[in-house]
Structure formats: C-alpha cells, structure tokens
Image 1 (cartoon, rainbow, N blue to C red):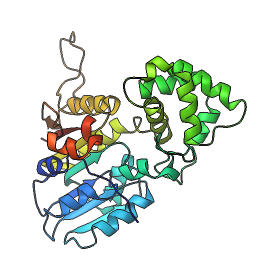
Image 2 (tube, one colour; image 1 turned 90 degrees about the horizontal axis):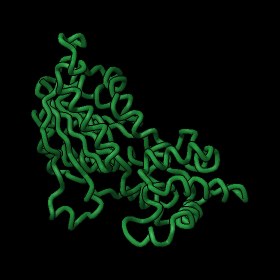
Image 3 (cartoon, rainbow, N blue to C red; image 1 turned 90 degrees about the vertical axis):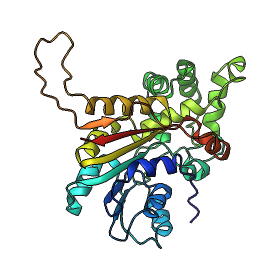
Image 4 (tube, helix red, strand yellow; image 1 turned 135 degrees about the vertical axis):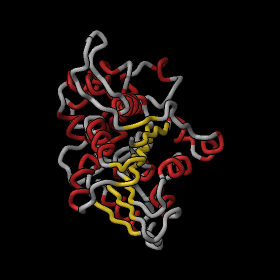
Length: 310
C-alpha cells in the first residue's frame, strides 16, 4: 500500500513532544505513521506509542511503516474524540505526550476514489472513516440551500457562498451531483470569472467546508484537546498542528483556556468559576522553515502549538 504523506513540522513536533525516551505517547492522527515513525526512532524499547486513526488504510500503512521499530506500538481504528475511552480500555491513566496533526493527509488528497480532491475526478465521498454513513454526496444533494450556504460560509470562509449554494441546488434539480469534477464545474459557474483569476483554486474553500461537515472536524476538536490535556502527566506535552484559520482558532483558544486560572467576566469582584489552569502554553506558534516550504508547499499554512502540563 502506498499511503504517501509528507509529515509537516516533523522535527519540531518530536523535539517539543519527548520528555522521556521510555515514556508513553499518543498520536491522535496516525495517518501514514510519519510523525509516529520519527517519534519511534527517538524512543527506547521500553516506550509505547498509541496511534489513533479512523481510516483503516492509515492503520495498515502505519503498521507496516513501524514494523521494524523497537518500541511497542498499539494502533486503534478510532476517531481522536475517543482518546479517553481508548486509554481507559488499555488501562493507561496518564501519558507523557500527545500529538494532533489536523486536516486531511496527502494520501487522501491524492487518491481520487476518496473524493477529497478538487484537482482529480472521483466520487463525492470525503469520509475519513468510510464505514460511517454520511458522505459529501449526501450533503451536496440533500442539504437545503440555507444549510449549504451556512457551511460554505462558516467552514470555507467563502465570499461567494450564497451563489455557490444557489447554483448547487439548481444543478442538482436536473440530476444528483455524483463526482468531484461535477461539483468543481458548478462552483466555477457560480464564481464570477473576474473573481477566479487571483487566489487559490475556486473550489478549495467549498471542498474544505464540505469535508469539515462530513467529518465533524471542528465540532470534536475543542473537547478532544481538553480530554487530551487531562490525560497528560505533570510536564507532559501536547502538540497540535493546524492547517487553516478555523481549526487554529479553536486550538489557540482552547489551549489558552486550559492555561487560564479564572474565566469569570472581568467585572466579577470575586471568582466564582473556580477554573484552574492545567497547562502552560508557548506564546507563539512554530512555523515551517523556508527549507521545509521549498520541499513541501502544502506546509505553508501549518502552525504548531505546544502546551505543557502543569
């Protein structure tokens, strides 16, 4: 299996993650195992890596990639929202480090049959876990015009969201949209030619929005980060790589909340929330180096945020 994926900010993530070379670490977004392989190469035979991914292709690829490493590894086909349940099932209370590499993998983007790419024709799917029911096809052909507008505007931050929603609904009245290329053509019709000359591919934001909706990517992120922080040992590290402003905003705000003692309104004379900080957060995100950007242009929007358990 060729599960190709170039892991972004790999050296920086591993350098910030490891506190004990014989410790226990969780890779919440296993993918092809790129970050986990780099982590395993720095660990002893007494260490353990727990990998989570909802894509069975990723589990298979990572199993092969880490086959010759000395540390123990346990891979579970589960969404990272279930990190606490997985650790409970394994009888593990706390761990030394947890990492998240959010977004879609290069393998998923580059495999037409997965339906993530606006650059290659494939079925409208976009499910990271292909055993789940709802796909991009269901959203594109089943959502109301108002709901299509909402997700394209909110999750894609697309200025032409209203027209795109209108054009999708009009087009599907003739026949259902079944292929990514069909959707791309509808989006191109909806966006005026003059607005398509500059900036990213005209379908990029709409595809991002539909993918986020299919996989509930933003809905699960805040709670998952909070659950992960709770499972860290004192001094343990939480590393989060984001790729677009929506998920980065959630990551930034959640880590900041976890690093704040009182969250009462400013005009409250006495604290009544009893909220206690459990993290220390590095103020600025870590960005890819110019050398990495030359090798992997997809890294250009990546940011690594790091929290340390108090």
